[in-house]
Image 1: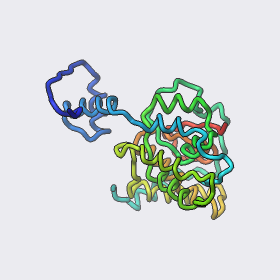
Image 2: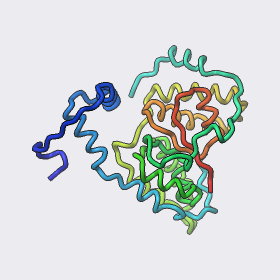
Image 3: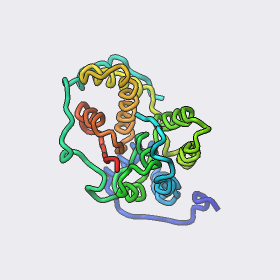
Length: 255
């Protein structure tokens, strides 16, 4: 029998009305019964990705180069928004001002993974404490990261015995569809503006512009979805979080 078949069980309890309204707003669900089913399913449905992610540690030769670096768009509103976030040249903050893996309890807010997280884990470059975090949280994925991982698969030499194709494929296959997010037109448009502002203010070269664009898409996607972005790219994402305070970030250093 499926988990949603048979409606014989009952559940009751007192909760904050504000919590219920916020949960409905975030999920798009109006019915109390469907909201309870959704909340229980999020806990009951097993997500095989964290286990596979942890087991992927060290499965790819670290010497293999794996390079990583729909709503409508309101053009006028996006342009006004870009003018507000332009703050002049910014500097990276001291580590003591930033949230790092291992400095708090493993459990917490839902995570969106930067592309570097998948690659660093496969090449055993993430701190061991990250495994605890991955086991204790809901893990979400961006089609931006999937695109970059697939690009890596295409770039790899199939005759190289160190190839990472199988390891990359194993991670992508285990991503739950309901936890894979695609940026909409509003996110893409604002990310393009934000990356342009970032390149101009920070003096980035043309070679860095594409990386900045992808970073901005992930950053704004995490912000819009209410997710915490996990990354080892401390410098760029610290600058972005200063441009647009309020985004949730979690950093780690390569082991």
